[in-house]
Image (tube, rainbow, N blue to C red; front, side):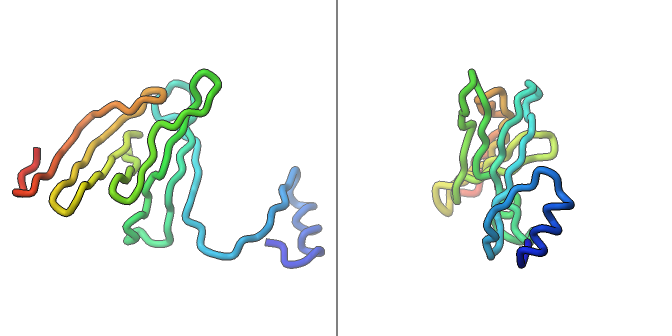
Amino acid sequence: KANNEAELKAYAQQVPDYIIQPFVEGTEYTVDAFCDFDGNGIYELVIGNVSASESDYYYGAVYAVYTIEEDAIVQVFYGWYRNMYYTLNDGTFCNYGSSGADYSSFTVYSISGSELLCEQNYFHEPDGTTI
């Protein structure tokens, strides 16, 4: 952040090809990353959440993943409050879904191009059983 014109000039001398953009005060929660999850040489754009605390419910949540297919941007998936995705250490994604207090599921997906491939799926039923 440059607080005045003198600071801006000093920073401009230190950084080649700099970009000037307005400073927005507040907490930033969205992070973007490019990762090749399926090893096909095409990087997927990952839009997710990194909050200040790992105890935050949304810490590490992935909101959306996009890829390129036939020179077009394609959405692989997107999540929301009751349909959240998280990355796992092996490059797969875990989806936590819920349709109410009694019904929930955990599904592990891998990516192949613009397709989600189900690797594992667990359902929690109202009587406490897991399928």
